[in-house]
Length: 263
View 1 (cartoon, rainbow, N blue to C red):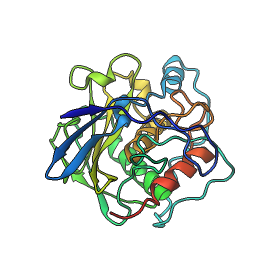
View 2 (view 1 turned 90 degrees about the horizontal axis):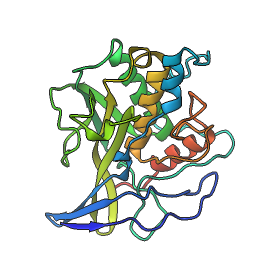
View 3 (view 1 turned 30 degrees about the vertical axis):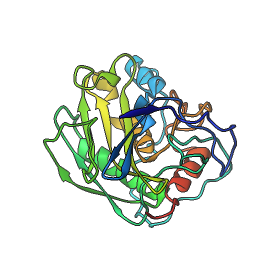
């Protein structure tokens, strides 16, 4: 197995353009003529400020932006205005993003061990919001006892679960969740084929449900489908955002990820 590092991030842009890639290790190996690439998004999304505010009792009061059940249209939502976004992985030698195949179903399963009350609705909302923002056909297909969070294989469904830092070391410290996917490369083109979202079971109870927990889950789903972190705190993909809703950059990036060519 060979170890490679991603190309240096392209210059930051706004609106519909790519604004960078995460500088984390990319592990590449050949399997049956394909290249398997580990999603840099596994480096972990945190949303530290949201959880800290809830636990301290200082969380702002806001209408829940995730609760409204809007039917999935099959087409990405449009961004209102411009903002920043980054892609967790780009195509070799290109600024174009790696994403899931928009012409196939992306199956999602949930391991409920350690999950908070109301977890089923939280996951359902995260799946719906991500599907709406990307136009991807994300389908929640059931529950599982699978806990193989970081060794997903092509053909495995996306796995959602809760764990501690002993089981998933990336959850150590202030990290409250991680999300990412694995890609296969064929003829120089990469597509994500499966992935994981894991939330920290050791987050204080006040931060395990409600708007904050829902926002963390939606943030990690955005990592799952291919967004990286940004510097703007008004975007949901900031590591410690000041928002509990998608920003214009988030929506533009998610729409681009749902518009990659079919495999």
